[in-house]
Length: 117
Image 1 (cartoon, rainbow, N blue to C red):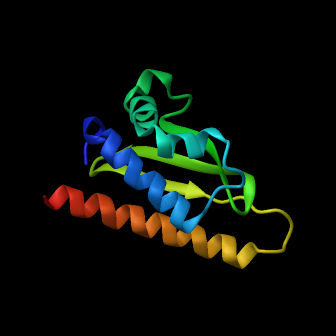
Image 2 (spheres, helix red, strand yellow):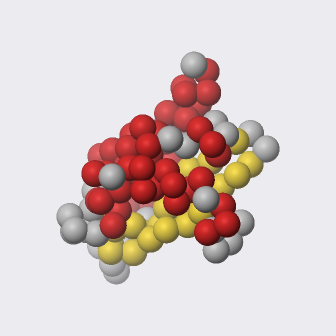
C-alpha cells in the first residue's frame, strides 16, 4: 500500500483492529475519535509535512496504558503500520506484549490483502 492509499476506510479498519486487539484506556481520547472520524487519521497520516520524525507517530491509549504508540513507516515495500504498547508496572506485561504482536500481525495481513486487490 502506498501512502496515498491510506484512505478513511483503511484508517477505520486499522482503528477497529486497534480496538479489537488493544482496546482504549478511556473512550474519550483522540484515538477513539479516530474510530468515529477516520478521515482525521487518514489526513494526518498522508500529510508527511506534519510528521515529527521520518514516520507518522501518535500516542494512543490502550487498555494497558494511556501512552501506547501508533506508528506508520514508509518503506520500499509501502506502508508499515505498527504499535508499541506501554503497560503499567510488571502486571499485564505478557498480555500487553501479545496484544502488540497480534495487532501488528493483523494490520500487516490486512495491508497485504489490500495490496493484492
